[in-house]
Structure formats: C-alpha cells, structure tokens
Amino acid sequence: MSHSLYVRFHKVLERLFENELFRRVIKNSGYLFSTTGISAAFSMLQGILAARLLGVETFGILGAITTFTSFLNKFVSFRMGELVVKYVGHYSETGDDLHAAAIFKLAALVEMLASLVAFSLVLLLAPFGARFLAKDASTANLFAIYGTIVLANLIAESSMGLLQIYDRFRNVALLQLLQSAVTLILIAVAYFRHGSLIHILLAYVAGKMIGAVGLTISAFVEAARKWGRTWWRAPLGLLRPRKRELFRFAVSTNISASLSLVTKDSEVLWVSLFRNPVETGYYKLALALANLVQMPVSPLPQATYPEISRQVARKQWANVRYILRQGSRLAGSYTLVTALFLVAFGRPLITWLYKPEFLPAYPALLILLVGFLAANTFYWRRLVLLALDRADFPAKLNTVLASLKIIAIFLLVPQYGYLASAALLAGFYLVGSLVSVWKIRSLLSTYE
Image 1 (tube, rainbow, N blue to C red):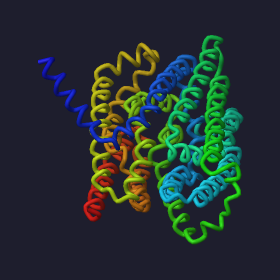
Image 2 (cartoon, one colour; image 1 turned 120 degrees about the vertical axis):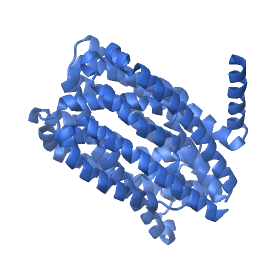
Image 3 (cartoon, one colour; image 1 turned 30 degrees about the vertical axis):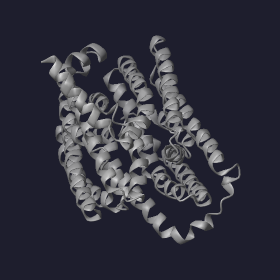
C-alpha cells in the first residue's frame, strides 16, 4: 500500500512540473517560499512571544494599532506594484526601455504622494483609533509611532513590482527574511526583559523599515542596470497617449483594494470597534493561525502574475490554463492537508504555545479555514482578471460583496462578536472565489 501511494504521489509531482512555464513559477515562488517559510516561522514565534508577554487584552490592542496603520496606508494606495508588473512587463516584452522607465517613474511618484497622505491620516486619526479601537485614549502616541512605517514604505509597492517583473525574487526573499529576523530578535529581547507594548511596537517598526528601505534600494539598482543610471529622466509625456488607460487601471485597482480593506483586511478593526480588546485578541490569534495555511501559497501570486501577464500578451491561452490548473492543484492540496492538521491539533497548540486563556480563538479558526481553503485554491483569480484587462470586474464584484458584508457586520458583529466576523470573512472568500473563477472561465473560452 505504501509503495502504491508513493508511486501515485510521484506521478502527481511529475504532472505538476512537466511544463517549463510552471517550473519557472515554482522556481520563482521557491525563492520566496524558502525564506517565506522561515519568515513565517519567525512571525509565528514573534506572535507567541508577544501574546505570552502582553496577555489577551493588550495583544488585542497591539492588533488594533498595527491593523489601523495598515488600513490607512492601503486605503490611499493605488497598488502601483500591479501597474508596474503589467505595463513595465508589456514594454519590456517589446524592448521599449524608455516607456518602461517612464512607467516606473510615474508609479513611484504617485505612490510617494499617496504614502505622504496616508501618514498624515495616521497622525490625524490616531486619537480616534486610541479611543474607539484600543478603548484607551492614552495609546494615541503608540498609533502615531507605529505609523512611521508608512514613511519607510514610500515606494515599496512600485519597487516590489519592478523586482517581480525582472525575476529578482531572491532579493525580495532575502529582504523578507532579514526583516523577520530583526523583528524576532528585538521581540525576544523585549520578552526576556519583561518589556511592554511600546517595546513590541518598536520591534515591528524596526523590522518593517529595514525591509521597505531594502526593497527601494534593490529596485533602484535594478532600474539602473536595465535602463541606465539616468532612467529617472524618462519623460512622463511619453505616457500621455495611454493616460486614460493607466488612470482607469490605477483607479480600478484602488477601488478593489479599498473594498478588500473593508471586507478582508480590517477584520481586527471591526471587532475592536464593536466589541472589546479581549475578543480582538482572540480573533487576531485565530487569523494568525489560519494564515499558516497560506505560508507556501502566499508567494505564488507574486511569481504567477508576471508569467500570466507574459502569456496573455503572447495570446498563449493553453499555457494560461495550464498554469492556473497546476497552481490550484498545488495550493489546494497543501491547504486541505494543513487545515485538517489545524482542526485536529488546534486546541493543544493554542494551549501549549499561547496559554489556555487564548483557547476561545479555536472556534473562529475552524470557521476561517473554510474560506481560506477556497481563497488559496483559486489564489490567481484577481491577477488573471488584471492580466486580461478586466480590472473592473474585481472592483464591481467586491463592491457588491462589500456592501452585503458591511450590512451584515453592523447587524451581527455587535451581537455575536468575533465568531460572526470570522463567518462573514469565510463567506466572502468562498463566494468571491467561485464567482471570479466562473468569470475567468467565460473570458478564456471567448479568447480560444
């Protein structure tokens, strides 16, 4: 029986990697996962130490502070990384370096402006966050301190996009590892010295600043290598004929990102607003454990998007379908196995690693795993629509789902708390994934 299973498993692996395109996707995501796996382990250790040091309530306040800044930063973002991947990738395929440099310059300038606006909002709204999210007005300065990471991330998205399109995944992976290592070391020092919330926050700030600045430097080096040292002089006027297209793409991705913030990335904030820091602590932990199923999956979109964009530009539809099919098999299989492990051993893991007081996080974890299974299996759904010039569809779909979810949040979360929030997020992932996949299949059938 064991030999039969081995043979079957070997055949599955052969089918997954028989195509050069998918091997390239795996190779690039492998650079990320080799360090993402380590980074994820570091992040888990960070969370364990922070939770044990702070306790449930203060751990919930930590979640409110970090999510608050992330929310505002992403809210004004135009996802310039996606614009860079699509349009720099297009001009690179045609050998038009001047237009490619102009696109990156434009993206960097827009993102820089958006980051400055985001930082201003963090400072302006810090008292609101302290009073209504942390439920402690004295924490306003902590919101402002953590907000300084926005300044370090001035053009991090554009930089990431450039490194992706030129296959510099190893650079990205090493920077992620360095960021996680620095953060873990500083949190460990705070833990063994019996530090407080401010020490944990400063550890996160230091790590994130190192990662963001490193990305920017790496991108500038790559830009100079590809386009020459004077690439930044590329005239933006070259892009005038495509200004409407670029504007529409940026706005569509911004709308989609903003809706995602409300419906997916602000989960901790909703619980903080309508309930209390204790339930926020439970939910933050449930989300962290559920994210374990995304460890090897999270690098796949970064590695898949440039490859999908190239194949769409070449109208190689069979290759597009192949990459999507094999990607789903790989991501879905891993997610299912990991989810079953968490269902079986979630309770003892929480008790042993985080202390028994965090056990109420387990029911929320079970609910979240249903949605994460669908989201991971079809991890490529949004990026394929972007590559097919249908950036408007995710925005429209998210608008509908976001409206329904927000109504449900106001009706259910104040009464049922973090468990209702977990159920709504799982439902959002499930419905959004199925509808997006249906749309992609319809589009691909018209191109072939």
